[in-house]
Length: 112
Length: 111
View 1 (cartoon, each protein chain N blue to C red):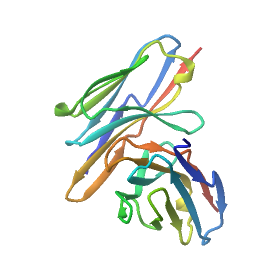
View 2: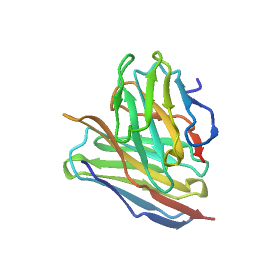
View 3: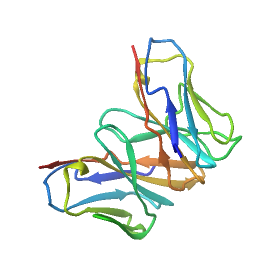
View 4: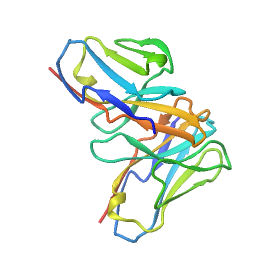
């Protein structure tokens, strides 16, 4: 089993460009999460999906949108990237909301 | 909102030494998890421990939910233990589900 996978691993954008970060899990988990990690800090929750068909805002949702495409996949979209969105983005999943979370390898995003 | 404080912020150990990392939280939580972020940035699950004590090899963890803290013990440290250790708390309330990470303890183990 691959666990949680994320694509791409690295991305450089110019201010104003858009992109979608992809996340997939093969553990049959119900809940999925998107976090960002800025240098020297812990992770902050952007959006989460408690179950297929639902999404909710986390601590720092501004500038992002999400789509729970099916039970396996949860994508994060930046419509108009800003330098403040330069960060490492992690996707995670758990078998239920608030249960043990398993993380993907992360996407390092730089916005110039 | 809930505050999560980890101590110490930085720790340097000689290989073979023992250490205790602490995570304090300011309000009741539903669940708590410890992670190790290795130097390559990968987040590795250590313990999912809302209460009680668990052990896995040289590592163990204790959470005392009523007193709002959790401890991570590392015994006989190795250079591969280097990295950042995070605790994260999970809560449900009228505002919905929240995950709050501490700022981490940065550990360096010298050979």
